[in-house]
Length: 141
Image 1 (cartoon, helix red, strand yellow):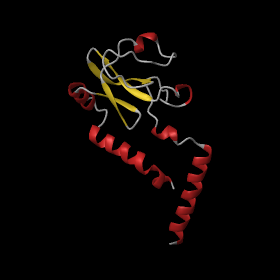
Image 2 (cartoon, helix red, strand yellow):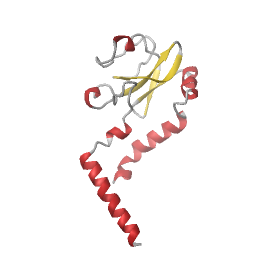
Image 3 (cartoon, one colour):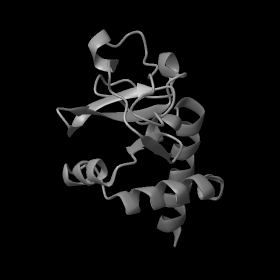
Image 4 (cartoon, one colour):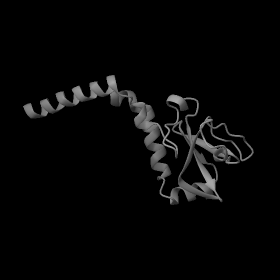
């Protein structure tokens, strides 16, 4: 019993140190193919992670941070100025946002390609993000 209480006391000390000196937002912020955290620091205005289609195919490592998810393939996208110009040219396709951070294709074909590429299981990921968004306060405190 004493060992268990010592464990919890140590856990509380480490958690307190982490929250005071760290940035928990980094744990949930998506990052692009260049290693930038979407929605944090210099990319604060670009919180959405977006997969780029390359020759009609989704590449799991081909992502950018955007200001908002495109609503159609005619939309222009606003990319960070630090990206190479060709990265953000003609990349829009109809998409929607999950978890407030990730743009997913609104086409079942494109979405299926993304799932097959090993990105994630969509139903599970959406449920996890929504559960965390709703319960984060209870989990932390």
